[in-house]
Amino acid sequence: MQRHEFGYFIHEGVNNLFSHGFMSFAAVGITVACLLIMGTFSLVAYNAEMLLKTLESEYEILAFVDDSCTPAQTKAVGEAIAKLPNVKDVEFITRQEAMEAFEERSLDEYMRRNILPEMFRDRYAVYVQDLNLARQTASAVENVEGIGKGNVRVDEDIAGGFILVRNVAGAVSVALIAILLVVSVFIISNTIRLTTFDRRDEIAIMKMVGATNGFIRWPFVYEGFFLGLLSSMIAFGLQWLVYATVAKSIGAADTLQFLRVVPFHEIWKPVALSFGAAGMLIGVGGSLTAIRKFLQV
Image (cartoon, rainbow, N blue to C red):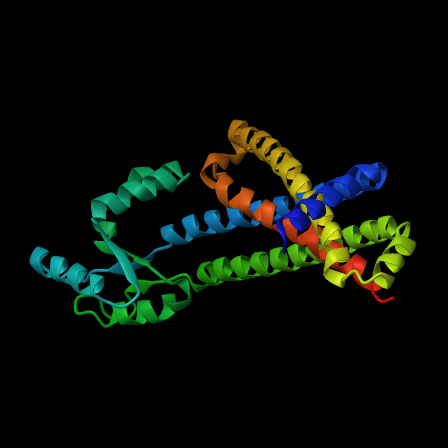
């Protein structure tokens, strides 16, 4: 591509934006709306994933130590568990600590007054790396000397629930984002097709005098590029504003304190790159789709 051609293509692309003011405004508005919806779904899915990871990191398998074990044997039990596959961390909990934790959770005053440390057993809280292997890890813990069969508590329903929610949320988010991306390309394509329809005679004449398809196509590609870039910049700014407002509202609500919203300043770079890439993909993809029909002269 020659330098003067490059400048011509950019000039024509920008000129097309302003010569079709209303249509360009409509294309930008629709693209911004689609990018905002895609961005919102993506950020909700990301925050849900982070919340699930936090909850998963707190998921524990309880391994009760045999009462006959000496302190040295109890320590050896913990060391043996820590060496097992899929074990991320091991925490020793004395019977006194277990009783205190029960007292904090119990709402029954009579039970809080009458429980004794002797009613509890020393235990290890085992944290796993992969919830999918929680059952296998629990079986391996049962085989550790000093634990034994029936002395391991693993809640498979909770582990399965975490995995199911994560998989469903991921699949739904990907499907919705893909659908919105296709819809955005379709809308941009039809918008640019309307603008090129007015120039179909000009395109036909250019073809007749020997202009290549590439020479005719590039101004429309740049038009779509600038439409997408402008849309992504506007959408990113609005997304930042909406995200910050929602995060502030959640942080101020006492009933939603368990929700942790990732601060936008921690994720703005990948969000900006994603918006820019999606906007330019929508704009350029729509332009290429629109102009293809008019080049078949």
